[in-house]
Length: 397
Image (cartoon, rainbow, N blue to C red; front, side, top):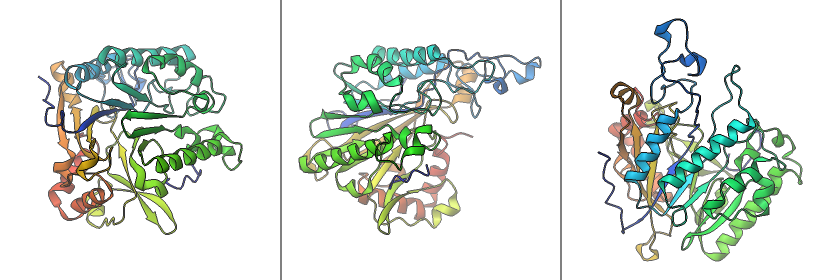
């Protein structure tokens, strides 16, 4: 993946304030206004079965089902962010706003997708002053009119440009034709490169031309390299949504969603190139996992959609050159989650602290050295392995 081969009462958060920078990552909302509690999950939580015992869709979502997120879950999640996560610098939203197009009896339309995007933009604007707290959204594979179909002529870019206008983003010609952009000085010294990774996703029809120099993916790769070279020359740290291991010395982090799971992953040298390595939840595999030289940490946050328990992540990062860490270095994160089964039983959503990364991994920063030590912690510490295996699927029983 790194060498881009196209084979395709709320918990208090006060320890970080005024000491480190703070940002939120939220991902994969998949809002579904058609979700109905008390329906059959086999029918995507849209319709009832004649057999009452099959109508088990919960008020706030249905764990481990093919159903998307009800408005009640989305509303409660943004309410948590509004009430408890205000002292932040910026927000990373890694996309997948709209529901899946899985229900053959209730197909998504372009109007549905537009309304889903409008709904989530409204929630962000209601929860935050987006004129002072920068929101950096990206395009997910379910955000276009056709699932996985994003090309350099997709109408979704123009649609999102208009919807995202309140966020004050640098949506230049690269976004209008490719869905990617660069945002400078999100905080002083920190640049975000927002990549449209759909051009590297094998299910996207545009990927078939990626070996051609004028293809959307190839054009974007040239753009990425130019921006990373500039970042290196400017001595700026970069947070970006795609990975190039050779620039790991100036990349503060790579932030993604989509997989729903919470896995420790890094980019490491593999001979003359680079490749990803992940800590699987299998304890036997963790015991023999040996990761030495790390180029870039890949931060993959778990999702709101209840494939696993819904989750929201808050990072703290370095803002002071004098501390010995480059600006933007991830120092820690708190992972919040909802026990969805309990929420459905009591009729109320409660986001709770699931874990703090520094305590789980036994490190105080997540640069290349810290991430390598985090992998070692999972290899040598049985308690850490057991907890990690639970957290991968967001404490889903």
